[in-house]
Image (cartoon, rainbow, N blue to C red; front, side):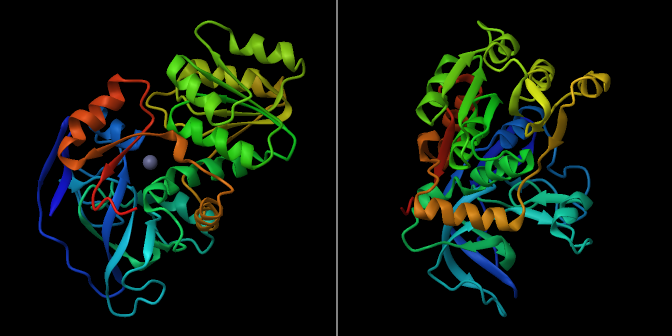
Length: 350
Ligand SMILES: [Zn+2]
């Protein structure tokens, strides 16, 4: 089978690999579609960040070279002994989060060590993937496999809205309109946000932000986001969500938020931020962060997508073949801001 394998920074190779065996408790999936994620780009440009390179991963026991891809869907091809939750022929999406199992409470568990199928073990940029049963989430028959490849990043956005404690009828400011920023707009709308203000530097991304439901999408290179929000909301906005991952947007997100409102960190920060705790003491703003998704959020995302309550498909900007993953996938995302979510076609089943 074909697979896109991460060897090292700037070294992603499409090569022939053996189809993996299915052991007991495992599920073999014939992959349909796999999305390219921002964290895949981080690994490609500046890795290894999460990928275990110099020693074996403590949770999975494997290390690079590894097949990437953690946002994928497909059809069950084979099940190992003892598997009960899915059968051959079922449509599935993969919940790639790997946890240690050390803590009983799932909320605590992911903070005792975490990894992802496709970063810490072989993932979905391949014709077949074998995962432990708990990662295979059975989908309704009507669910599009193409859209199901967006389930994982959509679950990230739903979890972020939960962590922000946004309530129905509140207003939000979202900093960054890349794929996760766009999905956060979609999730905030589904959760009943009254007004959604999106900030970015790219006109193409702002256009997308309007298309998926931002009330206003503002170029923060031209307008000062803090002034813009405080003109409309003199006491500050209810919730801000930081999806850009850089120091200026970190500070702006805190400054636009009302006392007792929350600023939620969704981004992966490559660098530390200089921050004065008095900015919280004197403003009453709460800062929270979010990581991945609780299991119930992943299931909720599957149900809400299948019923059409939430539709992340407008963020798809192109479909490519696995052979073109470096040029038309990774390099396109790095160089062309009009790209949001690029899906890699494996079986291509709808
Ligand atoms: Zn991702």
